[in-house]
Image 1 (tube, rainbow, N blue to C red):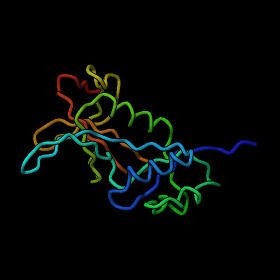
Image 2 (cartoon, helix red, strand yellow):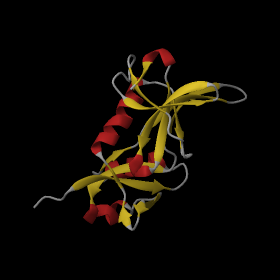
Image 3 (cartoon, rainbow, N blue to C red):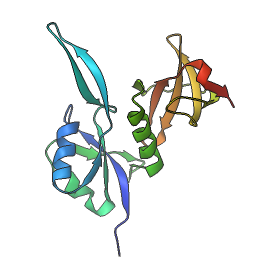
Length: 166
């Protein structure tokens, strides 16, 4: 009988996401760490860096029976639990995150509770076809893509002309 694999949500030590992901991959475990590029300004230079989209989180594709094994790498803290059960994220949510990252659109993560806004559909651009909510924040329109499994929301700045109220 084959083990059922799920994408489990692992919490890592601060700023250890890349190292933990690498260590798990070296052990043959499939890991997904969504990274976004940004330009950091230092006093003497600018540098393009890749940072995790979700601070402190990586996604580990494994079976429930092998969770303990994954926690044995340095920097791994725990697997996220909701109501006493290990939290896992559905493949569709992983696919959504990957598609957003691949488009290269500017994104930010919002962990605040967001009031429900207008339901919209994106008509054009790299995220065409996505449906979700539109909110105003700092006088700009943002499209919310909710990742309920980890209680996070990804905000994507989408020009109003690409949104259709549904």
